[in-house]
Amino acid sequence: MKAALLLCVLLYLNSAVNGGLTGNTVFFPQASANSYVKLIPLKPLSLDAFTLCLRLSVDPDVVNQPKRETILFAYRTQNFDELNVWQEKGKISFYLSNSDGALYSIPLLSVFRTNLCLTWESSTGLAAFWVDGKRSTLQVYRQGHRVQSGGAVLLGQDPDSYLGDFDINQSFVGEITDVNMWDSVLTGSQIRHFNEKEWVGPTANVLNWNTMQYEVKGNAIVAPEKYI
Ligand SMILES: *[C@@H]1O[C@H](CO)[C@@H](O)[C@H](O)[C@H]1NC(C)=O
Image (cartoon, rainbow, N blue to C red; front, side, top):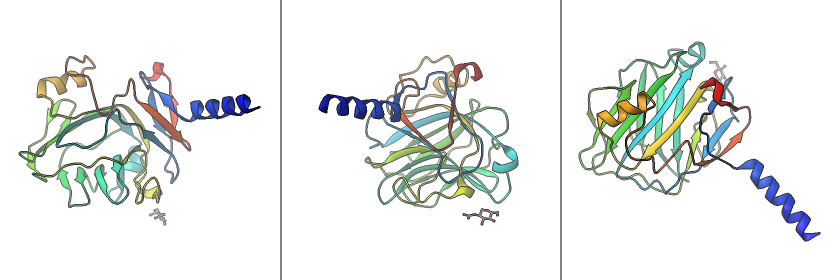
């Protein structure tokens, strides 16, 4: 009896947490306040530098409305939005730890896939977005800051509390794939290889689309490899 119960629990855990999304794209077909994918990092996000890369396409009729704020990536601890990436008010932006954001006038996301990377390092504060391998002008942002560990990484929703308080009007609508994060700033040459899907740089060691575990909630569709 106990063994059967244990088996049921194991089967349940197995269905809730999966490993690796190689070749998959996650599709959020419509705005919602309950659909998201939680990514389980390979190591705690205690970071004084990072490179975050992902590929995105959107429903522009929803996401590109002039007044809409759309979450692209969220990492939140119990009390703080530690690292959020947005498309908002005609710009792409990121925020570290509840402060004013760094906004970039770069091309908005579209119905076709964009390769988007973000690099930041604490020692200089230098931060840039990379769009299909092209780098934006640098900005200096949150020099001396450190991203804190102990939070949850979400795609699809902006949590205003830990894993909760989602706003349908900030939800992501479209597809996200190849979310990878490193604990260092990669070189332009390495980032351009991400763009071409010919990876030559160091293995992504914070988030790794090919190996990390994830949980899907609500109406987020993990589409198979043929759509990549
Ligand atoms: C979302 O936006 C629509 C249209 O602007 C508005 O009617 C609705 O109240 C908003 N919903 C929430 C939860 O803010």
